[in-house]
Structures are given as structure tokens and as C-alpha cells.
Image (cartoon, rainbow, N blue to C red; front, side):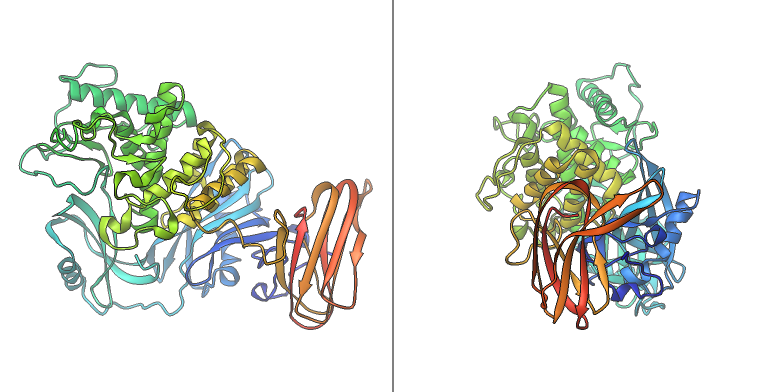
Length: 613
């Protein structure tokens, strides 16, 4: 019997992979898995056979599809407005529609869903991102915009230079990962960390800062700078394309920017930071003795250093790639530059800096895993700004997720926690174990060429503005599955295991053999739940335990004539209990697991099966 969900409340029905989120075409059985949830218990990454986009206009079809599933699967109130903001098609025969939100006509900042589907069939195979449910959210501001901004500015240790935008009312996912009604203002200011331009989100209820989204992404955020001289941007044009610049520092920046374009184009087919040929603008000699470099939302800016903490920042190819990658991130996932999403933003910039160096040098060497080694602390030989293969060597970076920084400094640890992603990428590329023995996981090496393709696809296809480390784990595992196979997917999961990032699907319950696929759910008398069919052969083993009177287990094989296909049991376990086991050796074919409720109401069960079907 095939499971259909017509007329059944989705939220009450649980498949053996996880809670279903949509109906497949023709009432076919759904095969879904919830990989991660947010603090409210709503899914943030769902994979499986989720449904079909049937309209020619893929953007509208994706919005219609999500409207049909968000109430039951994401806890929506039904009053949320969804807007398709972009679509990208790739060489793998898939397309990806990004969908943002409005509530009561107000933008929702930090909430975005991505619908992933096959180009020919429109089959949806994944949905990921964050959704803000309109449940109990306030509609009216208690504090006027100007008062709220004054309250927020009084909280921080910064001096406002100017307000650069009109203030508008929005909903935002705050730094506490909770929804807020807030006033949004773009503010330029000086702080102990230097010059900054941030979107400040002030609570419309209290005026307190609920989120701060920086638009400048510096390579080193803790040094001060002198703003008395040379702050105008972009400055005077010195060289264009293959032309010669007026001094060595300008020439180095110019050459490195061109080489960065070459790297992204050669490895990923990308034309500049937007992917659409935008001009890369770089400024040298910013301020006096400025020990920093940054992307300001429209161009790259480099200080000359002070000769002690650093030399000229733009002389270092990997720092130029790092800043350029911030621009790529702005135009792709747009990872918010705070807390875990900000650490991923920084980590991805370091990761592609390493990839570019390996590409330029014709392979990996010891300097590949150092950031800024050619210009950082010039008086100390072999020193670097960060060390991807051993992040804590710099004295501040973290390399193990349970030990991540969770305070408010460094925008919530965007530089310090980037070491977690850096080490995961290093281990995935080179193999090995955690350098400080925080875990015993041995990660198999897949090489930097494959690893960078996985992380690039995760950036362009799966990551969203508010993605955290668990979302990055799911994103890279999905990218590895898209591009390669089981070996690479398992290596990705091992790399994140090695640095302590949770995720990778629900943990196997006690008693499940290693390598088992775990199915868990509830079922009542007369109900049938199945996994999607999958090609397999050889040994099939499964054990099932449950809480209720009687649940039976079957292994089915599909047989087809020229006009139709049908399923028939080739093995079964039907004792008068909810504890069942199957061991079966079968020839090549399309198999599925089938669970049948014989008696009892809302019987919970756990099935450990090899292979997973």
C-alpha cells in the first residue's frame, strides 16, 4: 500500500525518515529527513522527495510550494508573505530559488528559505534556511525610531560619525536567535576596533540593540587606525587592467586583484565577485600606518601597515583573496557578520584564500594554511595572522565548537570562531585528526581541489544569511552529495565531527549498528509507512523496537511489467509485538522498508536498517 496524505494533517503524520513536509506527485510515498532545527523547533534543513514544482515560472512555483508547506512544517500562522528574490541554475541539472519573507508588509531580515529542485522534472529534493513564524509578533512600535537609536547607541562603546540611511521598521532575527520588531538604521562610527559602517537594529519595544550587521569586513578587527589622513574613497585612478601602477604597493594590489579574478574564474567559472563581470575596485595607502584591509560593500581597501604589526596588507595575495571572498559572500549567501554566521563569513574567506594560494603555487605547501604570512609581523619570521591547520596557534582563534567564543566582542567571535571552519576544511583536504586531540575522529583526505568545490557550492547553493555551524555542516554535506559521492559525504561529516560541530542527521539510538540508517516515528493500527524505493542488492538487515502492542516490518521488492509496477514482500517479521527483525539476502532490484501498524494507537518505533532505502 502506498502512503498518501490527502486529507491528513501533515503535522500529525510522521514518516519513517522524519515528519513529512509535502505531498509527492501522484500520492507517492515521501522520503524526508529533517537534518536540523532552530531554537523554536522549526526545521532549518529538510532533504528528500518533497514534491514537484509544476509551473513553468520556477520562482512562482517555489513560492506556491512553500506556501503549501510552511504552516505545517515551519509553524507558520498563514499570514506570512513569501517573495522569490533570486534563482540560480547550475551545471548539475538543478536550480535553486531563494525566497524571503514579509510580515504585515514589513521585511523580515535574516529569514530566508531556499528551494532546491531538478531542472527537468521540477522535483524538490531539499529546502533549507530560516523561517520566521508570525505567531505573537508585535505590530506596533512602543519606542519612536529616534529614541530607539539613541538608546542603542548609548549601549555601545562607539562614537557616531553620521547616520547614513532613513530608519525603517522591520522584523529581524536578533543576535539571540529570536524574532524582534526593530528599527533599522545604517550608522557610520568609530570604535575601539576602528572605522565601521553597521546596520543597527534597535528594539521597537525597548530601544535596546537586538542585532548589528556590519558592512565592513576587516582582515584584522582589533587594531586601531588613524583617520586623520587619506580617508576619501576610492581616491585617484592609477592603473587599469594590464596597466602599470605608480608604485610597488599599488602594483602588488593590482596584480593580486587580477590574479584573484583568474582563480575564481579558473576554478569555479566565476566572473568577478558578483559573477556578472563587475569591476574590482581596490584602494591602496588607506590612512596612515593602517594595519587593516576590508571590503566596504563596493570596493577593497588596504592599509600600508605600521611596519611592526604588519607590512602593506595588499602585498599578500591570500589577504586580497580573503577580502575579495567577502564580496563573493555578500553577493551569494550574504552571511550576517555576527556570531556564528559571521564566523562562517570569515572562515569561508580564509578557506578560499588557501585554495587560491594552492592554485597559484601548483599545489599545497606549509604556507597554504597560513593567512597573511608574507606581511604579518615582518620582524618575526614564519609568523602569520591565522593558522588553518592549528587555529589556536595565533593565541585567540578557536578550533573546537564546544569551546567557541559566545560573548559580544569581535562581533560575537567572527574572527576567533572562524578557526572551527578553517580546521574542518584543512582536515577534509589533508586528512588527519584534531591537532589538540579534542576528538579522536580520523578524517580521510579528499584533496583541496574537491574540498574547495564543496565549500563553494555550499556558499552559492545552500548557505543563507543566518546560517550557523550546523547549517554549514548540512550545506557542505549536501554539496558533497551533489558533486561527488558517499566517500566525500562521509569525509565532510567526519571533518565536522572532528571539530565538534553537531548535526549530520539524528544520532543513532542505542543498539543501532554503526552505518545503520535510522527511521523513527509513530504509527497507529491500520496505518502503513514506507521508505522510498532504492536500488540495492546483497544483505538486508533491520531491527525494529517500539512502545506499543504490535507493529510489523516488511522488506518489499518492486516488479514491473511494460504497463505497471507493483510491490511485494520478500521478507517479513510479524510477531505479536513491536519488536521485529529481518535478515535477507537479495539480488539486484528496487527495495523498500514497510512498517504496518497491527494494533495500538500512536505507537512509537525506531528502525535500524542496512542499507537505508
